[in-house]
Length: 468
Image (cartoon, rainbow, N blue to C red; front, side, top):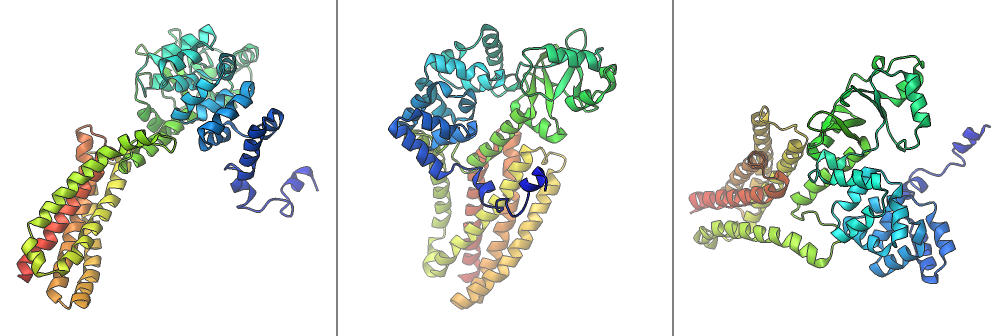
């Protein structure tokens, strides 16, 4: 049996769902051992335990322990602290850790980072922390970072890295390979060689695989990729992430107003932005802003309190609708028992349509050209769902309260509210997007208000007409 066969032998390989899955999370025993090494001040043991861990795992560890243990761990880890750990840390924890690092350790930590990673580190820090990191850089690296910081926040200019591999468009494969072998500051990770015209404007790029597979005398222009796009430095990073995802881009050159090359964006950075956009949408749909588990209580309260206040206001509006039918409810107590069901079903149906709409707007799948078709589809979905639950609730009303009329009222109200929920779930985020208001941020409150008000009004209004 060969070495490779032995490695994949099912008798010796770990069971699926055990070690492989556990390897993606921090092992509790390992964390306990690390904290014990911190308690005893055993730096050698700490380094031995930390050495196999990825920078992302170390960042998770620092985020999960309390501030006291985090401080002791960072101070004991000292000069072995890697800059990649800072890149992986949550912003709030990152500032705290930077303050703990000595200037020499900080300088060593950020020295080998790409410019885009350094920009990501410093862009949201306070000025003293920014200066601490910028002061640790070489003059050329500092200049590159400061230039990137001159671009607007969340723009391609902030996202790009300055380290690029670019050659004249008339070069051959052999010239390019020789240049890369001789170059001392070659980026650690890159996917394309960019071709430039005499005015330093990108005109194409060649993948490393095609470069290495072609004869040395081959001209680079003969093996360029057919799909080539440049990214304006001022473009919003969300648009950049969309382009990478939509067109399956691996890397793309960034250009200034005169179409000259200023940097490059790679797929790993674009996917981080895309993930952040998705996370932001989910958090905003829940009305919790950009909160995280590491935020202070006061910060979390500030983020959530305004939206809870808005929800309170909408709840008052729904209560005012109910108050219009006090006499009806007083004569038919069963209405008070059943009316939350109508509003709740409408709210859930509206949230379903809303979630689909917000996601479709973010991915540009829902546009002016297909919005009416989508609206009709959601209205039909609401109608059929409403009819299905109308039958169920009609039977419930008849069996529970012995009233065929009451069963008919709740059935009709269910149909009306689910149709309105589907309409509101699509229409509200589309309208907000037209007014350049983030649909993820405000849609939920409006949709819930609509379904509550319509649900109560339809149910109690029909009850007043039919039962009185």
